Image: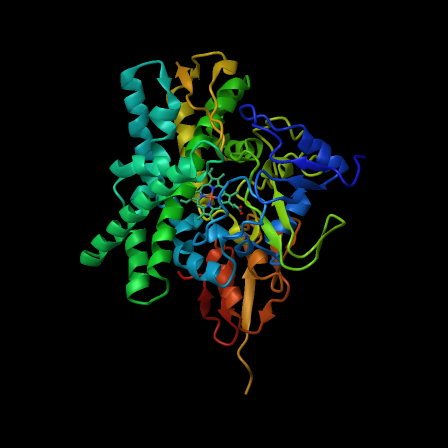
Length: 400
Length: 76
Ligand code: HEM
Ligand code: SF4
């Protein structure tokens, strides 16, 4: 056992590719609720077991609003957490705003988009085919699909996508951008969204942004600022994460012998494979958003005093050997698979069903169109992003 | 005069264990073997129960008025 008093610097280090730091496994076994020191704002707690993670994420005694604008809350970014986004809100504000968009993201509604998503992916693959091998899948596919789907859903022109690309990288940045750069991108996107809203006032639309404008103007269910932040939140939460996962998943499948062939022979296994890849490849690097205890709470036998910040980590929870057999193996047939890749509780990913659809269609189509797909460089030469909260390859050169 | 009550039903086969409903109202919902269950099927009206049914990503929660059996949430 390590001593009770040990406080570790967190995140544990810049991850190499999609590797998971072995320290998480050790902590899960020996010190499931441990003390950590963040780069900014001081110390907090890290919870690594699956069960404790679910408790922290679902228990209303842990607050997100209490992290907003507070310089004394531990975090990975220089700036304190900003308010105005679903992720940083507590009830009742959180519920009032999520209510306005929840219906658009249910399985039933998302399933209606399947033919269109299939079409968007089909166009990209045809384009890749036309150019011939090799191609960088990050640019030619991953960055092209989620943004178009989400823009169409919201009703903003996909040709403006470069603005969102800059913005989502900046927001998820720990060190890759300066605070001034982040602020500049944020302001630009706010102005852009405000313009989209103004146009809908002149000419109502039946897209999601149009529905939000109507909820603002006709029913007064949200403020102007909330409306704009909600739009920004959807654009950035959805696109970078899903794009990175398309690249990450393809990388894993191409570097695990037999995986590509298995999915080619058994396309019915794609949805389950996507779940396993969601479990295996944590899109974040570890610096998730803190929650603050509003009263004393017992987590895994450790008393978290009121006012303390707690971090969870999906890569730790998703490798919990008491829940998943051989957790460090990719088992495309794994069943059941109660992974926490989309979080848990009140802030469970709004776009989870949409992300699943996009990932299933993209991976499924890629396997079908390019049965002989392979990396065009040795696996160890694939370059990875650094300094961001999300992980993914900078480029994924493939051939067929 | 009887007070109005609501009935909560959860389709366990559809539930994906997102924990959303539990996060919204642990007084009404709990996870059993990774799937949600109402703590009581008949409850006094509470907006949190409607939120849970609206937020459920797979619409596994059905809330109805007990006397008329009218569906209160999710919206159809
Ligand atoms: C593979 C892709 C994705 C992954 C792995 C993912 C993961 C997550 C996770 C883990 C959370 C909870 C964070 C926390 O509690 O700290 C979350 C929340 C959220 N996600 Fe996603 N997400 C993905 C795609 C999307 C998409 C496509 C959208 C929308 C278009 C989206 C919108 C949101 C929103 C709005 C929230 C905040 C919900 C709330 O606080 O109520 N995400 N996501
Ligand atoms: S919100 Fe729906 S899917 Fe999530 S735990 Fe509750 S019933 Fe299950």
